[in-house]
Image (cartoon, rainbow, N blue to C red; front, side, top):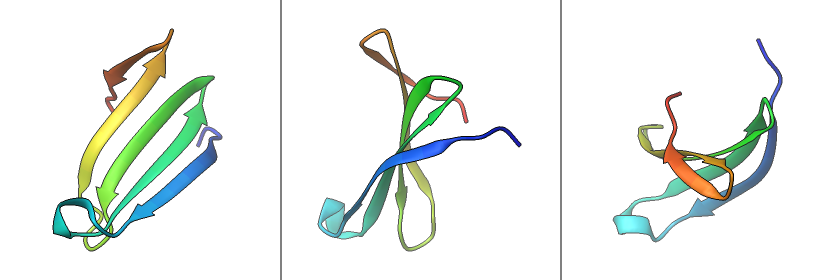
Amino acid sequence: MKAYEITNMIIDDGFQREETVTADFTREDKLYSISFSKADLELINAWVFENHTSFPACL
């Protein structure tokens, strides 16, 4: 398994009436941001940031 580092994590209890967690992490020198439902860990959003632009991440 390749290494990664979580750089930020936010727990939001007011997003669309359900708690979500957003975690930012780096892997292979790229910054990723994923959001998921705290209740069932369902993935809501996943983004990768490269060259000052964001793209949907394929995780």
